[in-house]
Image (cartoon, rainbow over all chains, first blue to last red; front, top):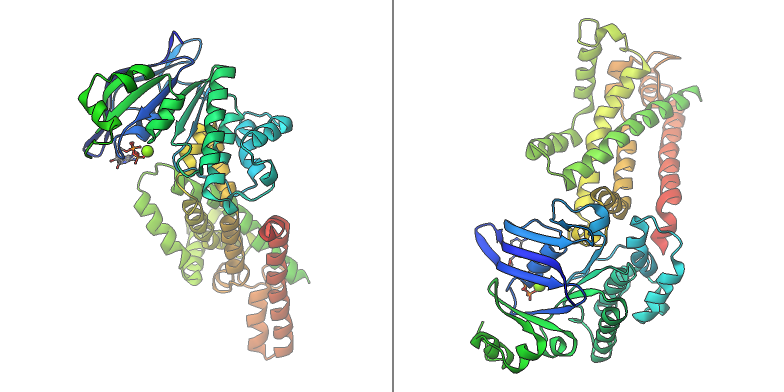
Length: 244
Length: 211
Ligand SMILES: Nc1ncnc2c1ncn2[C@@H]1O[C@H](COP(=O)(O)OP(=O)(O)OP(=O)(O)O)[C@@H](O)[C@H]1O
Ligand SMILES: [Mg+2]
């Protein structure tokens, strides 16, 4: 929980003429669970795409530490990008079987004999019964679990999760939260979790960030964030009084 | 029989060339940053509705003795016919490939990248997702050129034993009043078309289609 794995410096993301994200400074530390909270349209998913090195920021630098060196979006080699896996808010699956979807990330890495790992991860997300089902026949919650499984199976150093429990029933929410906790505790995976749920952040996060209109209002350790927030807007957000 | 084989030869070579160029071209137009994209699209859409006779005329001029490729002496040979057929099929293959790749959920691309795929692997995966559409494009190209008369007549010359194919033979036999023969040739043409299309569908997609 010590050295940073991401360093953001003076980052801004502009779409058209709108600055949807503006982060003067943010570190993500190796091994932490950082929850990113904030109202709809605040720029949470945009931040996650930048951390995933999927886009270059309009201004500033998003640097990722690959274990050997700091790299930006432009500098990252394929092996370095492959340390990061991301689960999107609205998962898009291949029109193949569930198992083929989960195998995809391994296949592009040239790993073909991973049947055991695939079965294991399918069991972890309680989808082993649907391994042969075609992905487009799945329910929303099942698709979301496939999306999580295809990221987990890669054993990434960093897991970026964009509202991974948004479509799920309480039992599945508990299952996924348990998985996230386990992944972090057992493998030391660094996790950045975007969530709408204050309760989920409370249950999982070691640090919390509040994003409002593209700006980080507060970033503090979970205990402080919930018990003694520094910013009045955090207090308002936590009490549900925040007016969007 | 010989005529049938010649028809198949010309069609398949032309189709192979237009697939090898058209599928990557369509994928590039759908996924890449293409300079003058609108112009390229306009050309492709025009190409899809190109009157074969005009293509024939164009190829005729290119390969006629005073044309830029006259020295090749391809006019009235299978080669000139293949060139004309390729020009006819290419826009169809490229255009249908492009639209079927565009109909794959655009949200998929960044998600595949985020699972560690290289740009090239993403392109290949998207093409596989669009495989039925691409196949349809190739089949449309096949259908257009195996049944085409005007262009092959012009640039091939319908020379017996050399450039006579099913369609041009049908025209000739009909003119001569040999309706039975013309009809028989027509039946061969139809069954060729049907057989090939069924084979492609069975071989490539049938099994998965049903699942
Ligand atoms: N590619 C894009 N082009 C233009 N505008 C975009 C793009 N992506 C996001 N935006 C805009 O940026 C703003 C932030 O979007 P973002 O998806 O990051 O919000 P969010 O915090 O994830 O919201 P939600 O909680 O609803 O998912 C939104 O107003 C959105 O319309
Ligand atoms: Mg979002």
